[in-house]
Amino acid sequence: MMGTANTMGCFLEATGLAPFGSSTMLAFDAAKFRQARDVGERIVALVREGRPVRDVLTQPSLENGIKYISASGGSTNAVLHLMAFASLADSDLDLDRFDRIQASVPVVAKFKPSSELNITDYHEAGGVAAVLKAIRDHLDLEVPLSMGGNMGEALEVAPSPDGRAIQPASDPLSPDGCFAILRGNLAPQGSVVKKTGVAHNMLVHTGPAIVFDSEEDVRRFMLDKQVQPGSVLVVRYEGPKGGPGMRELSIPAAMLVGMGLHTSVAMITDGRFSGATRGPCVGHICPEAWDGGIIAYVQNGDMIEINMPEKKIQLLVSEKELRNRQKTPPVRPDHPAPGMLAAYRNMVTGADSGAVWL
Image 1 (cartoon, one colour):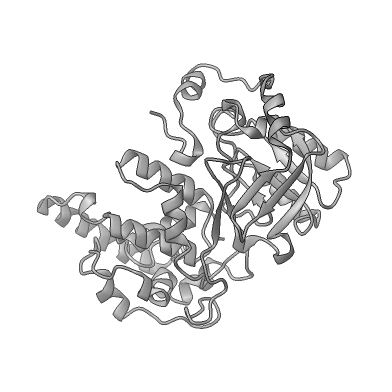
Image 2 (cartoon, one colour):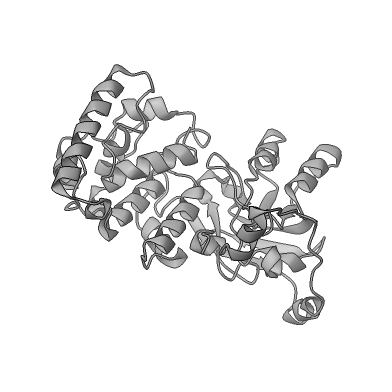
């Protein structure tokens, strides 16, 4: 499936760091052995030439990689990883720029769980190179490849979109990227959703909040109570500091789908979701609850508006009411952080900058 691991492996191909086919090829394919030898020989040559990774992973190649992830319906965790990379590489990439880059390309492919097609289908249709060929008009074709040559030369011989697993850019699945960076009073520093995994009727949704202070709480509720259609499940204190460690709420998200609620119930969190998550699941809400973000002050029954076309997420209470609530600091739940986790909690940044430890 196109989860986080496959998304990031394919990203390495799209930036030129990894050879085409390396991420989508079956593990026991005979070609793997040949490819491994080619890569080993190339690494030795690059070391002898004194060429560092920065010769390949440049700003233009990074942008090519972001466009690829968006065009292929990649994982929301890619946003977190690339914000972390930008923080550590002194890049000027931020959420707004990421959003502009990813929205500049059409979505030409989707794979499990957002489609019936799997990664083997993808590989047989040409894989990453074929997606890049479909969006080549949006790419910098001069970027170098670690295996030699440049992107433009590689795409000249790449397979063309087959119209089944990979669409031509003239007939896209979505015209403006697979993600949406949502902002509003609930997430002034941003939040992330994979809009191409959301049913059309849930792209705009307003509903009453049901609030939980941990993943365990929302899972128990979904097992023991009746979730009302139209609700917005708010799972907080699961961000980088609150978890601690920005826990992945893949199980509650999968439960929504399994219960048939992903077309009527939304879930929002300051934590994150699996790369395989589908449905109206908004993650990475910043600032997180542990840092006193507005999500910490949401109460049961508050109306929350999620509008993906307008890139908005809003707590529909008055400014006066919000100010009154903020006069009383929220009570943090008991989320233990022993030993190194305590140091992590004290030093980690928000999800908008990659949840890095500075």
